[in-house]
Length: 332
Ligand code: UT7
Image (cartoon, rainbow, N blue to C red; front, side):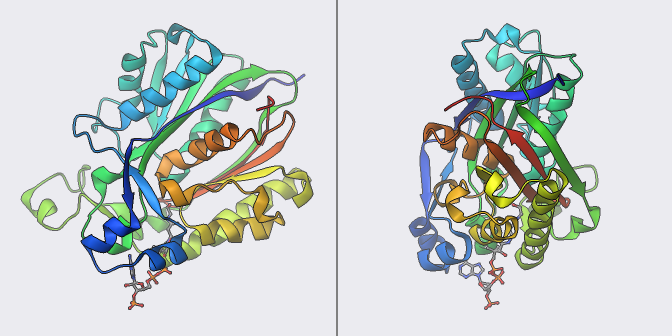
């Protein structure tokens, strides 16, 4: 039987501090009503401790995975850290996580596909397992979005939160695991969602700081339109490619950027809202963290059974987008 990469454990970390819509009402001209209606978000978590960053949240999520499978950190072969908010430009956040959890036998690298980061990381990690080369691969998605948010910009500040989620991939021959994925990029989206400075084009300078170029910029309306089409199209495409109908799908686990984008994707897939894992209300958009956090929440609610067909779907900066078909491995 074909070797597949099964998800055998899922862990998460959310920082304790909560930033509510009411807090934003005190910062700028907005309302709880506007934020909830336009995005579905009520609150988000913020990592306030200035001495901690993305690697801390990722290491915490990874530790929970190790506990679940009762593993020694030395058992881990590979760590893929998916993020747009690395602790530093280099070294890779994956190396910091590796050191933090004591996974001395693992190699690691970072993967930047913005909000599609976890999906791209999952597909990448699955390849390493499917070849038979590695047996225990940690794929971690997480972002400290509060580190790149302009809290005077009401159009983006309300959207994002901090958090991380991790999965363990292990080889399987029982037909479950990551069965297919479709990944896409379109670099012409570069003008609509970006963090302009801090890279080699615009290194930090008084000018970049003065112009707020170290913060996220998003043309929300333009990204929204592309996200609705991109996420819905690719989800429908992966279903058609694998002869899956709406009734065959147990759950959609979508990137959590906007409730209206999620609803449009579910409609297009022909699945009802009860089969969609949604936690945007509590965490906002945690970028590469959203899908593993949603997965973790669903597992805590014991929603999945062995053999369930799950579709993961995401859309993000780049543009990057895609979908994965996962046949779930264990009863939760
Ligand atoms: O995860 C990566 C991918 N990102 C996404 O998928 C996000 C995609 N975009 C979105 O989710 C939505 O476009 C937003 C939630 C960002 C914005 O919602 P929208 O329905 O597209 O609103 P808009 O940008 O068209 O703005 C409508 C109005 C504007 O006022 P005027 O020009 O009509 O007078 C904005 O200035 O809402 C105003 N507005 C706000 N009002 C109250 C913008 N932000 C706020 C705010 N509170 N926080």
